[in-house]
Length: 163
Image (cartoon, rainbow, N blue to C red; front, side, top):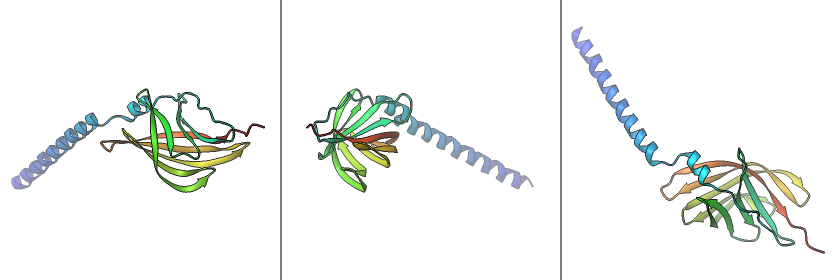
């Protein structure tokens, strides 16, 4: 009977040690990883973008309060812009997959000097001169591999030709 009690105590101590080690490693990971709130807060707002007559663009806003214009790409280019840490960053298209959405694809990946940005979205209703984006996400992956997802909505719109 005493031998059984000793085994139970030994198992309990071993479990406690494992739990404490898991908590310590989780705390270390948590301290070294940026929080999603920090990343979203650092994702600033772009100024208004202007399209020349006949040009189209992809416009994305955060899908939550406060609403912020966070992503823009002009159709026919392999670039986009996004504000991170108060600085407008140029992004370079590295892949485009999914379904055709006007002059864009529904899943695209961009690279910057700070990491990668993935864009994916669901097309919505047609508008005069464009189409809504009902929902989607920006996936920000920093150089260390930490990924933060930001829910977005938006539209693809074209500036009418001047006549």
